[in-house]
Length: 234
Image (cartoon, rainbow, N blue to C red):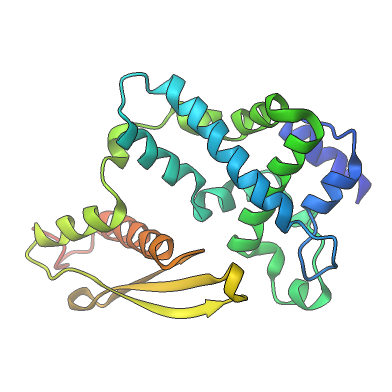
């Protein structure tokens, strides 16, 4: 495990003076009482500020609305999950036996939370400058390659307009599951387009976030669909 922790610190570009912070950031509540939820809370705020600063510099001509939409895309659970996989967080997470058996090391919500906790731990260990360097290393390339116009509308609005332009009815959304305690619930939502027999799911810490995620996945599925004779062809 120590070798893996050393490799993780090299990948994120920060070596911890207080190794207990690193350990805590990687500890899920199923493992023990000294878990990462407080650091996740802190990391969420630090990540938002660091991303905001990077976007402010990158998109000098964009207004607040555009910057807000791009930031929302970058810090959503799906995006954080991908970054967590890239830096190998599943290999170093500390999970309870049941959670580990249930595939918790690959679960998007757990990995996204752990990434935020890692950023929070970096902030506690080295201050905002250190945390900002880590965020820039993790997100800088994707920000440089991002076109702000891509995120000019939220996913639900874009999906609705995409369907209406093809004379298809608007999608419907339904909650398929609610997990966790009342103060830390996770919502699972399905986005349905019945005429096309399509269903896509989304997960988030609120129904609104989960619906946006489901809509984004539905849009991705629709835009990449190119089946002969499909109702999507117009």
